[in-house]
Every structure is written in C-alpha cells, then in structure tokens.
Image (cartoon, rainbow, N blue to C red; front, side, top):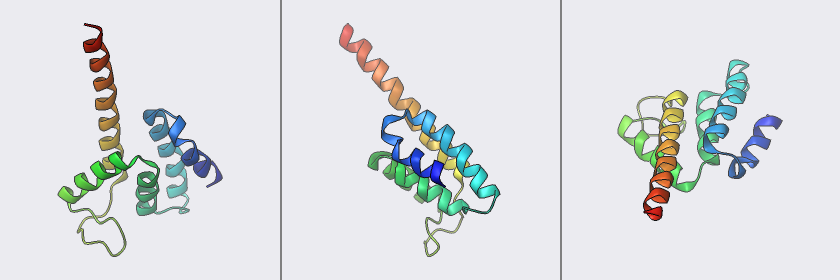
Length: 107
C-alpha cells in the first residue's frame, strides 16, 4: 500500500500511460492477495485522475449501468480492465490532439 500511495501522490508528474501501467501492476498484486477489492481498485484509480477524466469515466459507466459503490444504483459490478481501457483511450486521444494542434500552428 505504501508504494501505491506514493504512486498516487506522483500522478501529476507522470505520463498517464506510465501511471496506468504502474497502478495496474501494483493493484493487481493487492487484489490477488485480498488486500484490496475490485471496487476499491477502481475507486482509488478514479480518485487519482483529473476531474475531466473522472467525469468521462462516470459518464461511460452510467451507460453500462455499473455500480460505483456498495449502495450504488447500478446493476453490474465495476470492471477495472474496462476502466483502464477507457482512460488509456482518452490519454491517446489527448496526445493525438496535442500533435495535431502543434502541426496546425506550424502551418
């Protein structure tokens, strides 16, 4: 948990793809050892994201009817791999947008 807490503190200085890779590795071990639940894994992941990315995850999950808490209104349980795929997709889109905008500015 100490390593995870340090990673979360360092989120703002890491590339999002690197953060996701490290977070996935650390929390997989915690889940496998029953030190963290799947719901805790997803919620902790969300807590470290920017507000904009967190909102996109909530919007996505609402369309999938996912349960975000023990008393949530969704029917289906959270799926970390689904969340990870969504966030990595958003990170890739943001990188492409930056490259596009730089190229357009140079024209």
